[in-house]
Length: 83
Image (cartoon, rainbow, N blue to C red; front, top):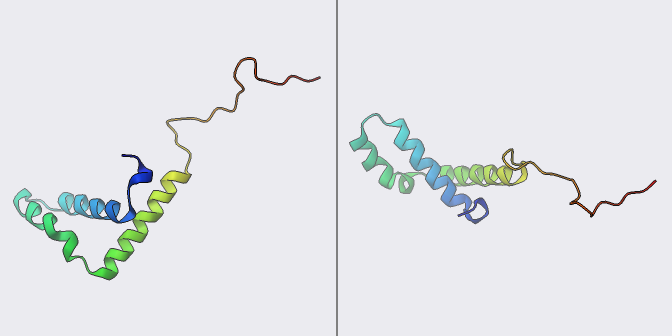
C-alpha cells in the first residue's frame, strides 16, 4: 500500500495505537488499552489527530525523497546540442 492510498483517519488511528503501545511498560495492560483506545478518544481530539495525520501525509508527498534523487539529464541521443 502506498502513502497515497492511506487515509488520514487510518494513519491517525495507527499512530495513536502504536504511540499508546510504546508508552506502556506492561504488555498485558497495553494490549487491552490499545485495542479499544481509539474508540475512547474524544471526537475533538480525534479530529485534531486526523488533521495532523493529513498534514503529515501531505508533507511526505510534497518533500522530495532522499532515496530517489531526481535526475534531470537527457537520455543518450535525446539531448539537443546547439552552438
